[in-house]
Image (cartoon, rainbow, N blue to C red; front, side, top):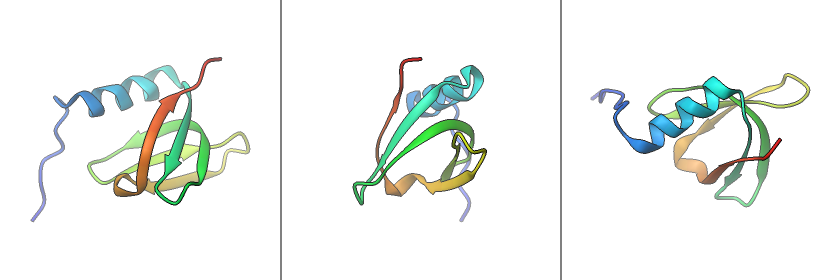
Length: 72
């Protein structure tokens, strides 16, 4: 069953703002790993982060402990 992508959720709007601003972002995974880069896109299940070497990483939202914007 496919659920609709809910753009009214605050978390979705915050991620959309990070994408629009191309803001440096830190994502900590439940494993304790910390990834930094810029959020390129999101869908209902995952987030794509691009690092300083233009390497794209797709992260399942269920694996994220926290996400925070970094100051420039």
